[in-house]
Amino acid sequence: MTGIGVEAGAQAARHRALAVLRIRSRALAVALLPAAVAVVLLAGGSTGHLVGPGWDASRWTMSALAVLVLLAAGGIALVVSRARPAVSPTVAIAEESAPDLYRMVRDLADRLDVPAPSAIALTPDCDSWLEDRTHPSHGPPRGEERDEIAGARAPRRRASRTDTAPVLVIGSPFLWWMRVGELRAVLAPVVAGTGPSAQPDIAAARRFVRGLDAAVAVASAPGRNPVFRTVLAGVGWVARLLLRSCRGHASEMERAVAAAAAERAQAVDYGLRIVAQEQVGLAYAGWDRLLTKVALPAWRMGRWPSRLDAGVVAALTELSRRDRLAEGFASRLGERPACDLLEEPGAVDEAASLLAARLFHGGPAETGPDWSPVAWQEYPDEVVDRKWRTDAARLHRVLDTLGVRRSPDPASPDPDGPTLSRVIDHLTDPAPRPRRTEVRPYAPEEDRSYDGEQAPTGTTDSAGTTGTTDSAGDSRTPEGGIRTPEGEAHPGEDHPEDPGTERSTALAARLTAEIAREEAAAPQGTTPASTPPAPGQGSPDIALWDDGMLPLFPLQPPRTGRELLTDHVTAMVCCAAIDTAGATPGLDWLDGPSLLVNGERAADLTPRVLSLVEEGDPAPLRAWLIESGIRPEKPVRLV
Image 1 (cartoon, rainbow, N blue to C red):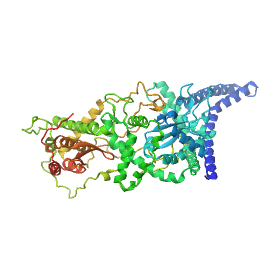
Image 2 (cartoon, one colour):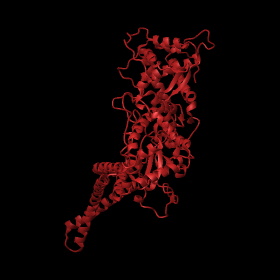
Image 3 (cartoon, rainbow, N blue to C red):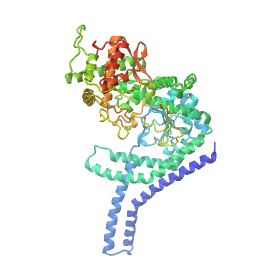
Image 4 (cartoon, rainbow, N blue to C red):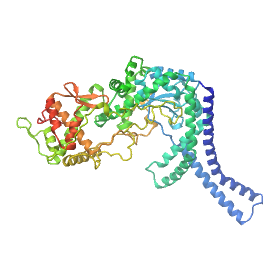
């Protein structure tokens, strides 16, 4: 460890913290200035020095102004101090449910010579940080205060905020993918951040900034009467002004804290930490892929995979088989995984999976008939097959509204049943346009966000309690998950340049309208559970965050009408393959639902469906159907 570097970083952080506190002091001085002037005028009048009608009017004016300013300042100070700062949704981990994990963190803190975190929590994200939960609204019920790391009951007296260490938040995918040594190396710079957090000036500056941020949120909350809205508008204006004044100092303070923590952590598993950072990027890529391609279709069907973290291991193992960037990573699986540090990893994985469904999709907090868990072995039948048949049924309902005639098979017991031929005949362009000279074959490996590029990597040298430095880059905004890039299409919105025939465009528009009606009629399902599990036993900290704005990080990818139509036609083809050719639904860990024909994945189906949708040419799809033994004229079973 370079003591000079650590000391320099700590001094720089304290210097910036003092700058933030000076801004607070100046704001207080401005609030007290009218009162000070009023006191001087009153004292001058009582001593006979400042007499006369003009001085009397000044005394009354300044006294009234001082009272108003003091009342306003008191109200603003009350809102800033009482407003509940934002807290990340997490799954609490009690020490009795993970004694080995707490012991590892405690030993790591001892090696770094810093205070141990007060508790440990998991988040369904590829990131790790320290979070300050010393605000009274974040504390445990009175009489139940307990230091999870030390395992000792807190004294009856109310402890100072600076005496309580922040909570260590760990990304749940790290526990399942990383080995014990890798997790310790990755957490070293994060745990080292508890040292600066105990410095009084830095802790006070952070509380001031978090209080201002919470006050802005309170002032922006809707649903208040006009009087309160007017008063809070002034509070919000002052809080924003103070935030703008101290923003630069606060950012530089967090950077200095992170730099000091990283410097301190270099003495702990530094070589292993360099290798572990590769696993951080790999875990991020696998987690993002699993959520968008595998979990999202299940959430839309009202089912939530109960073992998402275990699915990350399967997805990354599959990635190591396909991608040359991941060669050699599967050999690590023989070492002890970090999830062995938990007493009941299955229960923790289930709680984290439910929390992920709530954050990224907005599902309910409790299991019900329309929201139930699904195991990975049940995923093909319970999710994939149901999804395909639901899409196929929607497609035929839209065709019925368009007045498209059926394609009956006289030999079929149900001549008016839904058939694939009906879809193909309708989308076939009577006057097909010239076909493209080259059709690029579909390759699942080429559709991944990490194709040809290094997987997203980052650093866990985050020591601040505000989480300003992430362990995997900006993991708060997974690709395609949180914000839509400017100019990108919205769901169901076609670009004028989108290819497609007149029939496919009309059908896509009707499908978009039908899906919009179904989504509008569907219940939101964000009611919190009536009997939530006990906190600290692998349950989400639902009391610490407001779930009224779920999903916080929606993963709904923007889909154009053409893409929706392609998905529905593909679903109809898959239903026909299952019912007439003995194909089976399957799960691809990197690409989601897949069709297995003769035990092999049908990876060449998508370009043939696109040829029908975009060009009105059914020849490639019909050739594939004949080759696979699929009979499009036979009715299929729908939901």
